[in-house]
Image (cartoon, rainbow, N blue to C red; front, side, top):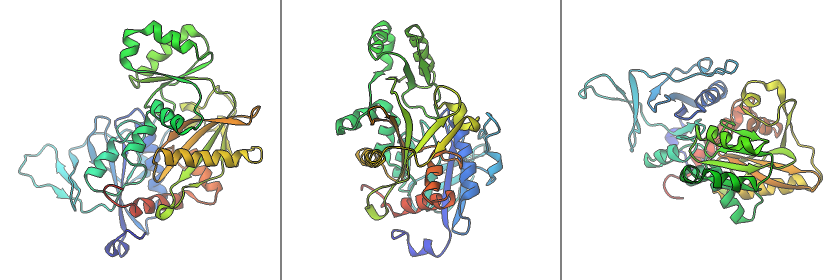
Length: 379
């Protein structure tokens, strides 16, 4: 950790875990926090847990993983409290204050936080907004920066940039709010050119929230309306035949090339696609085959494409690159790039690194060290 000061090395590194948030993935973020709180190396790190309520208030919350775990399909929610946090640029970036007291009540300085570990999935966390706040406050933080987070969160922007690089991304149609309102029938006609079946997705949502598989054109309008409940911007994708393959990417140390874990394949025991239920609730209906059974040379090409996508989008820290692989043609397309992939202990990203010999606790440590290694300011 060459960029960490001697004073930090001599004491525990103060890590602020931030989770919850304003997106529909609030419970998943809490579940991720439960995993990290349970695994983080307490001999090296002092942990400051901070929860963000669904309406955006920051709170100091208990350091108790059991409070944030998923219970079946029910997740935790960060509830409002009387004491809130403020973020202020400078040597002491975080202050706690009494939200019901008068302005004369002095704030409690939490002291300098060495690094922030955002566990915020979805909008207002994974989309560059939180990262911009950290940049403004001059704080080290885990994961991708502002532009990479914003580009990767917007599925149509990801595909546009990767296609410009010459990487394969499949066929798709982006539906901005005004076009849907003003020319609904015209949009439906354009989408029909993609053929059936279609996948309709909120552009900036994750965890498969709001996604529909459309097998009849007469159902397409309703599916778009459903997706718009999560995001007014919607993307419609043509069906990409083949197997779903994932690549876990980890940033290189001291500016070296990003690293990749063995490719993993999502194998569904039931259901049409990898939806919210199979990701977080019904674990028996999905399994990970890692390394994926792929012909000689194909895995290497996919890993090279994952690194190319990671660097093209200027990702840092971590990302998961998702592919569809067609065994009949031995070709593949990039489906998505996730800058904060599922990070519970049973999520695919840490599982793939575990198969590479990097266990969950060590992966958490590596990500914190990468964040501390990265210089502040423009880079």
